[in-house]
Every structure is written in C-alpha cells, then in structure tokens.
Amino acid sequence: KAAGIVVPFDGTGSLADGTELPLFANVGGAADAVAAAVAGAEGVGLFRTEFCFLDRAEAPTVDEQVAAYRGVLAAFPDRRVVVRTLDAGSDKPLPFANSEHEDNPALGVRGLRIARRSPALLDDQLRALALAAEQEAALVDVMAPMVATVDEARDFASRARAAGLPRVGIMIETPAAALLAAELFEIVDFVSLGTNDLAQYTLAADRLLSELGDLNDPWQPAVLRLIGAVGKAGRQAGRSVGVCGEAGGDPALAPVLVGLGVTSLSMTPRALGRVAAALAQNTSEQCREAAEAVLVAATADEARAAASAVLSR
Ligand code: PEP
Ligand code: MG
Image 1 (tube, rainbow, N blue to C red):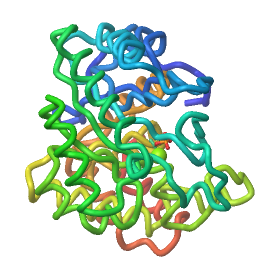
Image 2: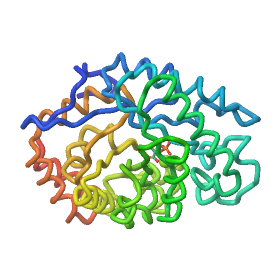
Image 3: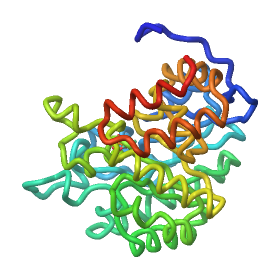
Image 4: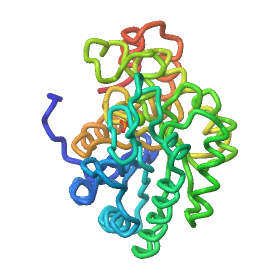
C-alpha cells in the first residue's frame, strides 16, 4: 500500500491464526493520546514524557506533572499506559536537566543517567505519576530509558516501587541491556525495545545523520539478533517484550518482530492500520519462520529478502 494512505484500523491486532497481539500508540501528551484513542489504539506503549516539557527552563512542579500525566491516562481509562520517565539529553535536551556541555551527548548523561546528578528529578516524576494514577484510578506501567546495567535497573525499580508504582519496566535500547535481558527480567516486569536507539548504539551510527541511514536500520542483522535474544529471554521468563521504536510501525518488519518473540507493538497512530493489516495476513508459524530466516541473514538486504520470501502480503 502506498505510504501516506491511512488504512482503517478496527482496534484489534491479530495474526491470521487468531493469535492476538496488542497494538499500542506512541504519544507525547494528552492531545496525542486523544487522537490515538480515536485511531483505535489499544493503549499507550510509549508516553514520551519529555515532550511535555521541552520548552521549559525550570523543572516542572509535581502538580504540573500530575496534570500532564492525567491528561494521557484519561484518554485510555482501564487500558495499559506505559509511561517513560524523562529521556532528556542527546536529541531531546531539556534545559533544566541537561545544562552541562557534552562532546558526545548521545553517549552522555541522558535518559535514566540524569538521575545520577539529579535523583530528586526522577523521584518527583515517579511521585507525580503515582498521584496521577491514583487520581485517575488507573494502573500505570512506568519504564526507564537508556538503561545499560543491572544496577541501573535495580535502582530504578526500587525507586518506582517505593513511589507506589508496582509495574516497572525498562527500555532496551543499548546492546548491553539486550545482552543482559535474562538478568534484567529478574528485576523488572516488562521491557520495551527502543529500536531507534538500539540501532544507533549497535551500529555506532548517529541516528540524526541521514547519511548513515543504511546503518541506522533495524533490519541490520546485528540488531535483529539482539532483538531475538531479548525475545527468547522474555519467553523463558514469561514476561512481555514490546517494541516502541519506529520498527514497530513498519508493516514489513512487524511480523518478523512477532516471530522473534515480541508480544506487543507500539507505534505512531497512523501506522496502526497498516501494521494490523500486515499481521492479519500471517500466521504465528509464518512469523516464526521469517524470524528464523532473518537470524541467519548476513546483511540487511538479505534479511529483508528472507522475510519477504516467507511472509504473505
Ligand atoms: C527508541 O529509541 O527507539 C525510542 C522509542 O525512544 P526515542 O525514539 O524517544 O529515543
Ligand atoms: Mg530511545
């Protein structure tokens, strides 16, 4: 189907054999969340909370944060909403969190690493989220961006649970986290693959440089093998593995991700219809076969060809 054409979405994601797969939306605030609900998303798989505060010189107060988070929760009553703590830094600097100059901001103090300098910023956000959840009578899943070690995950999980947020996850967007997935599943309840950063850090290629777009490609076999390792660890631990990077909204890749062990996909709402249509054409068995084929591919082009030889369109 031509890019840009919106394929209608009836609100459920399922494979050709009836296996259901929740399709969630990526949102940056209440207006996005309302639009995502109208588009039929089953919930929110990634709420990028930093988008609420991009133009702020000072950190938002707890009350301001509660208001911003309630707006998103209210759009999805009784649905899963995965809220990511501030992913400040690198391509999304926040003046109140990233005041120091860094020569390599993508490798610097971004995401969860901000809590090393300003633990109160993270604790305030967790408190605001717990308050927003209470006031909306909602269950919130909270996850941290840019986790690289088991110690970071442990610290985040204990802060989140202490704040009254029982369902805790992390994003897997560094190769280190992908390789430690089994150990991370002992600490957190779920993970979500941030394939944009996972590709950037695996291929060591700046995601903002279009000149390196061929490297920043989730079809790169090294990225697919890391995703496969996380999917396998998730299956063994009986935990959910989401994808919330752009790869989750790619109709050609979505069935492959499912075959690799991914249990939910989150994407820009306009991709929901196309991804649902692609999943509906393929059985679990086809997804698994496509996954096996891409795991032995040597190049991104070979991976694409191997998947399309197995999958129906
Ligand atoms: C990602 O890295 O894939 C992701 C979803 O996070 P962001 O694009 O906000 O860095
Ligand atoms: Mg990211």
